[in-house]
Image 1 (tube, rainbow, N blue to C red):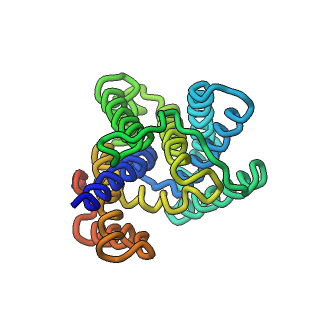
Image 2 (image 1 turned 120 degrees about the vertical axis):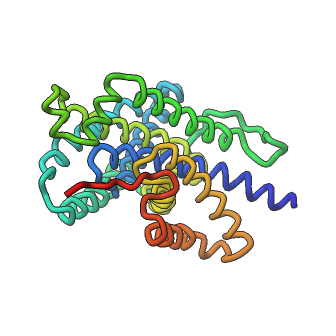
Length: 289
């Protein structure tokens, strides 16, 4: 039973990491109704920037918030310079561009920062908590994920910018007619996704170490979390992240083994898309034609 609870708590900690990246995927989807396959590489690239600043002598939190700002600017720039020009392109062309962006960022990070695996510091003290089942970093990562979810809820529910972003995602044409600057809202959505992804990368790096391949598997789990919860639902992405994390740990330990843990995410994606494409918290959209 102790081993079961240990795996359960470890799954929740891992799920918090998946949930944070799934939030970034949801932000992009709500802005453009496309899945950004380069989101993981954007987070990895931002984490390398934070590592470089810390190695240069910056305090952790100064490097943290500077990286968030840089990641926001990078996400907004990608939307303005690249995605905006593909607004009327076929879906397949957009998918190819996102995959190309993934490869470019991956290669650029290796060229600039090298392929050596690095340690990345955690801002939380090194001591076991929750009866020794969770480390402070794991607990802190869960707390930061829930904090980001709360901030997103307040932003979209109560702020004028958040309401304009929601309107833009629902109906860009009508939003333009009432004075909403749609292009600015889309750039803001990509910027926020970049910032959230950077936070996710900095929470993941102390666990898996920092290298150019660190987000490859994490992105798949995050995508499974977003699909499970509902690709357009931020609370669903967080709930899906925790569910995927727990299932991965429990099934990997007691059913399929560690070698097939990644297949859990793939099977989960297929089952959800077949049985309930809108996810647990998604809503079916009815269009009158």
